Length: 165
Ligand SMILES: CC(C)(COP(=O)(O)OP(=O)(O)OC[C@H]1O[C@@H](n2cnc3c(N)ncnc32)[C@H](O)[C@@H]1OP(=O)(O)O)[C@@H](O)C(=O)NCCC(=O)NCCS
Image 1 (cartoon, helix red, strand yellow):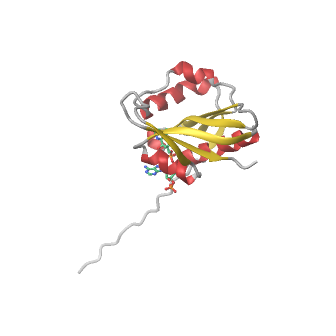
Image 2 (cartoon, helix red, strand yellow; image 1 turned 30 degrees about the horizontal axis):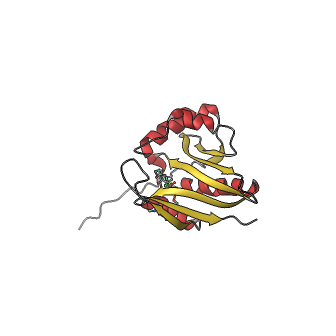
Image 3 (cartoon, protein in one colour; image 1 turned 45 degrees about the vertical axis):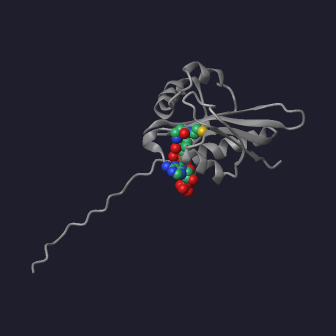
């Protein structure tokens, strides 16, 4: 048997580091594009404009892809310690599973903590396994269910977690 010689080539994949920073107006179109690719009922463009300047409005950026994800989180006073709210988070479909959602959520929670938040809440579709799994990883627990919360009739799960002072 003849053994054919093989050329073994090593493919070196460049890993582009993703950084997370505060969202700016210049990011909004890319954010809106990801939003539309991610949700059946996307937020309108104007909704993102309203959160500009909010410390918990962050984008994940890589030098090749530009804006590859975002998170919108804010807080409201609640007598003693404020309550944080993760209102929206999405990663561009072709960048999912790269740890970017985890990076965004981690940074948003840290900013909420720095701003005096004691508890954080969020709503998630009952059937959204990737998001549920991400939130559980961060210690979010089910607080209550809201049937027909979404326009298509799907139930929302309200999840909460404390933030250590
Ligand atoms: C939810 C979402 C933001 C996660 O972002 P991501 O960058 O793909 O997630 P990461 O790569 O950081 O993964 C972090 C963890 O999330 C969970 N996760 C991510 N993708 C998952 C999948 N397809 N299935 C199950 N769990 C998944 C896992 O727990 C994962 O940890 P692991 O890699 O150790 O298993 C992303 O899937 C997304 O944009 N979805 C569409 C928008 C959306 O549904 N947003 C949530 C609204 S409530």
